[in-house]
Length: 219
Image (cartoon, rainbow, N blue to C red; front, side):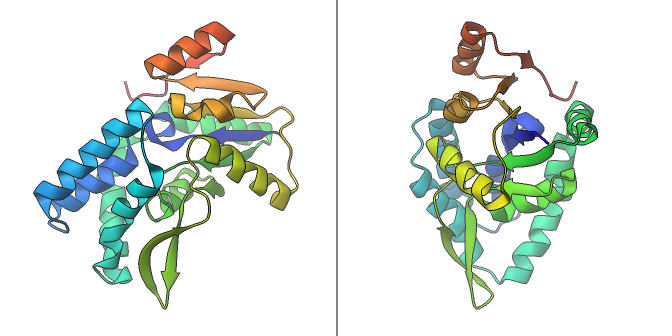
C-alpha cells in the first residue's frame, strides 16, 4: 500500500480551517473581536508569504482554548464544523479520497493547523491518520501549548518520518497533494507530488518539474 498524503487547508478544503476558526471565534463573541481578528489576519498573511513563526502562531491560536472549559469549546467546535467546514469540502475532494481508498492506499493528512480543529475534520473525511500540532491537555483542560515539533514546512518531513517508523511504512509509490510553497520540502520527497490549486510559487515549481497540477475547488 502506498501512502496518499494530503495537506488540508486549500487542498482538501476549499478554504483555510485555521483562519476560519479564528473568524468563528470572533463571530461567536468568544474572543476580543478587534484584537483577535487583526492578529488572525496578520498571521494568515505571514503564512501565505512563507514567513510565519509557527510557534508564535500556535500560541495565539491555542490561547482561546484555555479561557473556557473543554466541553464548551467542543460544543462550539461542532457548530464550526457543521457551519463553516462542511461547505468547504468539494465533491472533487471526496472523489480523490475515494480513489485512493479504492487503490488500497494508506491515507494521511499532514497539516500545520492544530489538532483541536483538524482531528475531527479528518474523521469527517474518513481519513484515519493525521499529523497535526497536538494540543496539550492536563487534568481535562487545554493548557494553550502543543506537544512536539509543529508539522509546518520542514517539520512536516520530520513528523512524517517519525510516523512512518511508528507505523512501519515507507515512501515507495507515495503521493502528496498540496496547494502551498510551504510544503515544498515534503513535495520534493514523495514519488508523486501533486500541486492542488497552487499558489504562484508552487505553480512555478510544478511547471519547472513537470508535476501534475489539479483543482479540487468547489465549482
